[in-house]
Amino acid sequence: GEDVEQSLFLSVREGDSSVINCTYTDSSSTYLYWYKQEPGAGLQLLTYIFSNMDMKQDQRLTVLLNKKDKHLSLRIADTQTGDSAIYFCAESIGGSARQLTFGSGTQLTVLP
Amino acid sequence: DAGVTQSPTHLIKTRGQQVTLRCSPKSGHDTVSWYQQALGQGPQFIFQYYEEEERQRGNFPDRFSGHQFPNYSSELNVNALLLGDSALYLCASSLRSGSYEQYFGPGTRLTVT
Image (tube, rainbow over all chains, first blue to last red; front, side, top):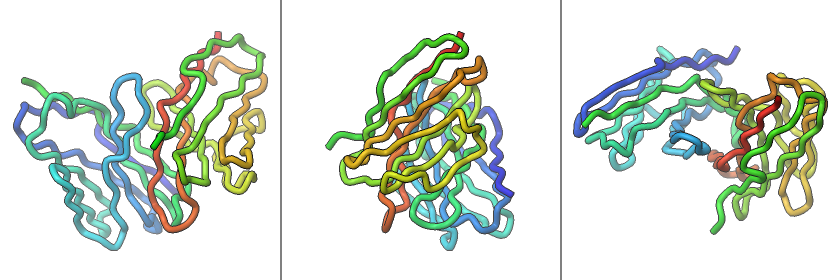
C-alpha cells in the first residue's frame, strides 16, 4: 500500500541547515517529490528524484534517498526566514506523473 | 508563460448545494489532476483527466465528478455538498509523456456551511 510519513514540526536558526525527513512504504515508487506550501498558497515544486538515484543537489537543496530503508530527506543549506513554510514529501507510482501520494507535511519555522 | 490558474479563489456554499471549480493548466500541459487538501493535512488525489477522459481516480465518492475540455482546461463538480467537503481544492497540471513534474495552481478554498 501507499503511505508517506513526515514529522510535523521543525525549528531551526537562520543560517543553519534544515533537514526534513520522510518515509514511504511502497517499494514500487518511481519518483519522489518535495513541495513547499506557504500560508494560503498552492504547492510549489522544489525538486524531485528518480528512485534509482541516491542524491540530487539543486543550489541550496540536497535530496538524499535511501531506497533500502524507504527514507527520503531534504536538506536546505543556509536556511532563511523565507524558507518558513510547510514542506510536503510525495511519491508517484509509475511514470508520466501518475497520481501523487502526499505526507501530512512538515512545518518548518526559521528563527532569527 | 502563465502557470496553472484556478477560479474562483474562494467560495462559500450551503450543505446540499452543488459547486463547480475551474482550472487552466500550464501552457503545453495536457493532463490535469485534482486534489483535496483538508486543513492541516496533505493533498489527497481525487482524479486525473487526459484526452478528455478520467484516467485515474482516488478514493472519492461519485458526488465528485469532472470534465476536461479540448483546450485541456478542466472542471471539478461536487454535488450534494457536505460540511466535510470544506477544503482547499488544488489543480495540478502535467505532460502525459516525457515529464515527471506536476505543477499546482493556487487552489480554490471551498467553505460549506
